[in-house]
Length: 414
Image (cartoon, rainbow, N blue to C red; front, side, top):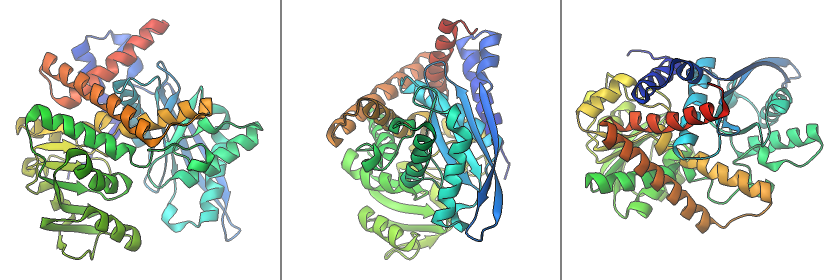
């Protein structure tokens, strides 16, 4: 299988969109690289009393439209180029949804599965001690990502407030409700994705009768639960996670499957599920495919076998550039990650607003405003797609990059 450098992919997407927009050379060069990159070496005392050294990053890709915004990953295979790419995509994602934010991302190279809660807390606090004066509600607002969660944010927020000696709950988002978190954040990424599927089904006249989910973490689980609620129809016929995949042409009960996953740690062994090769879920005959795992899952090696009518990218960068062209040629409609998975950052922005005013909205209002934002963004991207006769990913990039480029020009940077 061909390997891809995620940042090379991200830069190639920028070049394609910039060419369509006829951007000048200086603007293109500015947008091709992060505005700020930080590398840290974190000493952390472990339960054994031994001090381990961890390498960490924070990248603020562009802040012309507002403070950088993006998650913090704890992952053993984290690299600076992956974080650059994710920060880059966050920049276009916030612009596509028309939020007054830029893009950022952070990460720590570690294996959180082999660390105790106390060690994870020590690492979280060490990370914030390194970045404390680089982040803030008017600079850069982190959030959880792979292998981090609301508890991680609680530790980080506490460390930040201890350093500054004042309350600043809006400095991190997706926090526990008791510490300034918001209603509607837990399912926001999946809810936004399913909303875009609803809009795509309208324009394509597709009935979403069967759906498949690759990756059964938070986004995948929530998509399983929300597909039928939002679309009113659909059987979940296959699911995969890191340990395997199961299939049932008659469909699974999403609630029972999620409960099984939470109880056992895997979808394996769920009653009525036939074990199938993990990657084969991508190639099953279903109207909707939700990739919700890691990058580059859909590649030149398997794209030709994909049968879904709509691919909704709930994860970041699941489709390689070569695969994108194959899917487009086959008439498969790909809702790109910078649109499909933008529900999370949208509700994170709502959380920032609520924290700033110390006034919180109910869940119904959150859902209503999220639906409005995602529906409008989908239609804007679809109009760009028709106007320039390009595929949806390039259309989304054109919308996002045009907005960031305009902000850079208005500021007099280029």
